[in-house]
Structures are given as C-alpha cells and as structure tokens.
Amino acid sequence: MTSTRRVGIVGAGPAGIMAALEAARLGAEVHLFDTNATVGRKILVTGNGRCNISNLGADPERYTCADPAFLETVLTLWGPDEVLARLEEHGVLTYATPDGWCYPLSDSAATVVDALAAALDVAGVAVHLQTKIADLEASAQGPTLYVGGPNDPRAMDRVVVATGGKAYPALGSRGEFLAVLERLGHSVRPVLPALAPITAEVGHLHTLQGVRLDVRLAIDVDGERRGETVGNLMFTGTGFSGPAAMDLSHLVSQHAGGSVTVSIDVLPHHRGRLWALLKAKRWEAVPLRILLGAALPAKIALLGVQMAGLPPDARMVDLDWAEIEAVMELLGRLTARATGTRGFQHSQLSTGGVPVTEVDPETMASRRVPGLHLAGEVLDVIAPCGGYNLQFAWASGALAGAGAAQG
Ligand SMILES: Cc1cc2nc3c(=O)[nH]c(=O)nc-3n(C[C@H](O)[C@H](O)[C@H](O)COP(=O)(O)OP(=O)(O)OC[C@H]3O[C@@H](n4cnc5c(N)ncnc54)[C@H](O)[C@@H]3O)c2cc1C
Image (tube, rainbow, N blue to C red; front, top):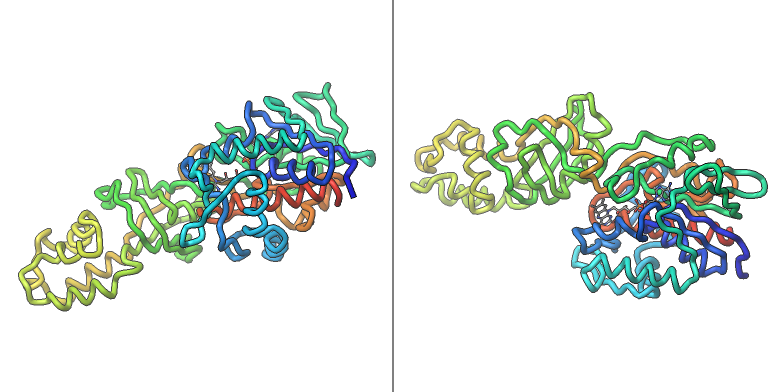
C-alpha cells in the first residue's frame, strides 16, 4: 500500500539518503535536511576517495554494540547483498576485492554521491540543504522539526534522525543533535573517537617512523588484554596509524586515564619460516640483521638487534642461540604506552551515542519517542575498517526509511 505519510529526515549522510530513498519508494512525501551545501559530504572522503562501500563478510560478529541480536536482525533484512543490489538500482555498480571489501566500479566516491543525488531527485525527495534542524518535538499528533530556531516549525508524520556522530566534524557531523535525543528521553553513551590513529610514547620505536607492515596488535589496560587484531600498521612520529591501530583505537579512547599499552608482534604470519632460515644459517658469518630482513623491513630488523643489546652487525656464527631467541622474542612484543588518539578531527568514526536496545531493529523506530526513527552513526554501533560502517549506515537507513513510511 502506498504511504501517505510526510517523513522528515535529519542528516543527508549515507543513512539519511538511504532512508529518504526507501521512504520515497514507498510513496511517502519526503523532506531531507542537511546543514551542508551538498548531500553525502562524508561519503566523498571515505576509502581515501574510493568509498569502501560495504563488505561481503559483514556479519554481526564484526560489530560492537549493546545487543548482537540487533545486528543479526538488521543484517538479515539488509545484508551486503541487499544493500549492493539496491545501490545498483540507484546507478552504483560495485566490485569486491578477494577479501570481501566492496568498492564502486568507478573507484570514485564522487560518482557514488552523484548517483545518489540524482536518485533523490528522480524519487521526488525535497532536499533542503544548508538547513540546520535545531530541535525536534514529539506529540500525539506527530513529531515537529524546527528549522534553524524556534520560529520555523515543520510538522511531520514521522522523523528519521540520521545526524551521525562526532567524527571528522569539518564535514558537518558534530553530535549536536544527541542533546535533543537525550532531552526527548533517549540515553546517550559518551561519544569518543574510534577508528583514529593512536598517540603513544614511542620511545625507541621512533626510528620506525613511516614503516608499514602487517602485525598482530593488542591493547592492554591495567595489565588486562582488552582487544587484539591482525592487520596493517604504520609507525608514525606520534604513535600508530593504519587499520590495525585504528580498529582498536576506541579501547584507548574508552580507557583514557588507565594504563594503556600497545603491544605489537611484527611477525604474525612468517615467524615459522624465519625461524627455519635462522636455523639453516646458524653457523654462517652472515649478520643476524640481514637474515631478519628476509621477513621484516630493514629498520625493524636493526631495531630488534639493538634492543637486545647486540652490535648492529652481529654475525650468526658469533652469537649464542639464546641471544638469537631474545631478538625474536623482542620482535614479538614491541610495546609503547598509549596516551590517547588523534581525536575526532582524525577519526573515521565515533563510538557512543544511542544504545541499539532503544530502537526496534526491524524499523529503527525509537522505543522511547513516538514517531521517531534513528539510523546510522547516531546509534552506538562500531565496526573495524573495511566497509562495515557504511554497510550499517545503508542498512539501518533503509530500515528506518521504510519503517517511517509504513511501519
Ligand atoms: C575519513 C573517513 C573515511 C571513512 N571511510 C570509510 C569507508 O571507506 N568505509 C566505511 O564503511 N566507512 C567509512 N567511514 C565511516 C562512514 O563515513 C560513516 O560510518 C558514515 O558516514 C556514517 O553515516 P551517517 O549517515 O550515520 O552519518 P554522516 O555521514 O556523519 O552524516 C550525518 C549528516 O547529518 C548532518 N547533520 C548533523 N546534524 C544536523 C542537523 N542538526 N541538521 C541538519 N543536518 C545535520 C551532517 O551534516 C551530515 O551530513 C569513513 C569516515 C571518515 C571520516
């Protein structure tokens, strides 16, 4: 049945755009508001401009939220296949890398935004740009949005709030609307940087600045392991960047004030092969550092030898086996004290916001405020780098839009 509802959507990021398209598809009169001058402003910078649009392996275990069953429902209804098929209907063709990361065929985020802007136009969505929604009121007659200030009320039958979190505030999302949701009765978990570079007292690791490699990275708080991942890491002058560090950065944000340690094993994949090489060359006059270089960047090989207190060119034949073992052991646990993250300006996501237990997973309808639906990063859901966060934004947006039009 065609919807006759008037649906207001606050925020034209991926969640709000998808909500608008689904609501319009069901026949609703849709009004989409954003403070920015164009829709999908943040989409443009995703995936370094390539837009890592989804991930074929997006299952609930990849996500962190208050209720895994919530993600199970969302991803059953709108998994990567459904999202990619709908994006294709809107003119976005995609491909997946062998490890499941999905990108537009154009490898260009700009073409994704262009296609979605055109789809909004074709669907007849009224897009109100450079328009800030200052407030929202809920009543038995339906929610009212206030444009700019108290003097411009817009009555709606349903409202979708898709205002994002606080990451990358220059692109419009500053978390301001969370205060409105809190006043209306939602709880709001502290909003902190996630998917951000980690700052640390790098000490002797400063020589590794610019080095990039796959590692096993762990975060310990007050001596207790809180998270571990295997992925690509970049050593920087101020700490650590790259997916491995960013994927666990929320733990650093959440435990600021505690004693947070970053532990790095630089041989997550090739330790066995390196051991075999060292054994084969045990009595040769070759420097240990050169052999370590078979599996590691030269700077790390040198640091390992130096940290064990050995001369840089110490030769295999001159070393005790225990000294060789000590170097290999050190390379399995390079450590640095984390001091924080590089903050919202450098983060791709924020953790915190409204807990998912306060919305219905099938329609994203608020369990606290009648007529209200929530979608995207405004909800307290995080996932690692790899397209999982956009997948959640599209999926929750689609459910919220359909729920607002017909639920
Ligand atoms: C640099 C960077 C790279 C990223 N790369 C990837 C990637 O490759 N893959 C991936 O999966 N994820 C990526 N992400 C994360 C992804 O962009 C977010 O998960 C996603 O944008 C969240 O979508 P959203 O619609 O919930 O919020 P947003 O995209 O933040 O959109 C919210 C919108 O609401 C508007 N708004 C806020 N308040 C108001 C108001 N009061 N009135 C009107 N409008 C308002 C804002 O202007 C904004 O446009 C990246 C993020 C960044 C910053």
